[in-house]
Length: 227
Image (cartoon, rainbow, N blue to C red; front, side, top):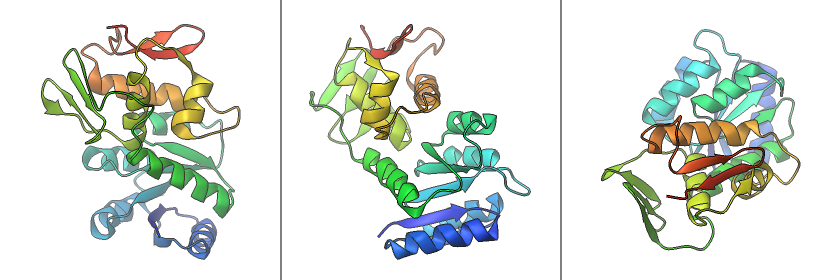
């Protein structure tokens, strides 16, 4: 059973998501505002957050930013439009995935399970610990250190780094990364990949505009190194 914090202001959507997830064996904590969501995040210690972007008062985007300021809990955005610019901004603010509303409980659960699996996924076979310049990637402890200091990472950021660094100099397309990291088997939305790369670079690169570790292969995708 997974404890899910649902931050959604529409009572019908909130109730529908809760009923569907409870029917599938999950526990739900329901709130209608970002302010309530932040309080429940501390009080209830959920394992995953479902976050609507269009909230009264504190926006979903600001709520996402505030959650990421102190927690790496997986966040899945609930969006009424798949082309909403707020989705991109939400991903850049630290969300791990998004679901377009209306969505079935099966779809929501699948996305939840995918982001939760990232927390304990060590990527492809590789050395348990890899030292790359001033960056240490520990695949056993699932942590990353830069200049000896631990870097706080959301599950998706960590899994992306583990996956890329396990095969230095190998280039992966955005579609390959969607399938391996986000576990999306369909021709997916590359915004997920690009936003996560941007967040990852901000955390591990000395100069994110001239990345040393996560490099762009123009017209194709990304690779780790060469260093």
